[in-house]
Amino acid sequence: METVQVHTSKNYDVFIGKNILWETGARIRSLLGEEVRVAVVTDDTVDALHGAALEQALEGIRHVKFVFPAGEASKTISTYSALLEFLAEHRLTRTDAIVAFGGGVVGDLAGFAAATYLRGIPFIQIPTTLLAAVDSSVGGKTAVDLAAGKNLCGAFWQPELVLCDYALLDTLPDEIFSDGMAEVIKYGVIQDAALFRRLHEPVRTDPEDVIAACVSIKRDVVEADERDKGMRALLNFGHTAAHGIELCSHYQISHGRAVAQGMVIASRGACRLGLCGEDVVRSLCVLLARYNLPTRCDFSPAQLAQAALSDKKRSGDSITLIVPEEIGRCVPYPIPVSHLEDFFRAGMEQE
Image (tube, rainbow, N blue to C red; front, side, top):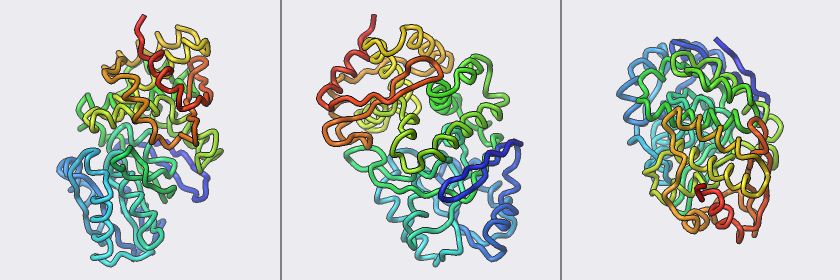
């Protein structure tokens, strides 16, 4: 088992191992005391697959469970409001906790509720997808979507603990596992060329080292810039276009597939501007294809640029993109919002 320690406004451990779900109850008691109650927040897919196992792992801890329909369409103000009412109805207090048991949607929604219910209660992340394990469960960003765009209503709220049992990933369909690989590839491009090369070898059978590498990179970035004022923007490589793709598709295109397309757009756009070589784009496309991830976008540059007007990385009349200089190093690249459509066009034109 690997342990990654995170030191931010709240210090916590990320435990990464196989078949460690059974430790959940003991770890919660150790952190929060014997009398703690928990509200498990999960979606109907995860609950059907793993709900019974988690209940056994809670080892007699008093708990209630909030289950909502799986998918990005549930990451809304209305689901968030229903969850708050549920917590109040069951009279959870500041000494109790929320357990987020699921993928990124579950973690974002449950974390935002934890950040705001009673002005903040503890929460624990137990990711059940690769994407959540390597990215969204660590770092304290919580949010729900608005009609205008993704993650526009949220808060920074760090978990007490992240328990990553990668045996839970065994039930993921190949398509969902590949979604997570888009974020893994992102980490290689932004900061770890060795990780990028490692991904040419099989990952799924033994992902512990890959998960730990990604979490360690995110830990370092978050510790340096917890509130997303500077360096943390590197984690957004590919995400400006990706969030536009998700919005334009009415969230029918998954986050991972959108990020794959967004990374190619950012890399090819950077190449056309002379910021990186064509080898970066080729290497990225080859690795994405290895995991059956898309490298082309069907929306127009104008559609993506319009969607990006609500992007959180926009500041007044400018927006900061993250672009690669080489595999293993990305840099911020601020441009006027009026130039974004041209950048996307350059990034989407085929040779």
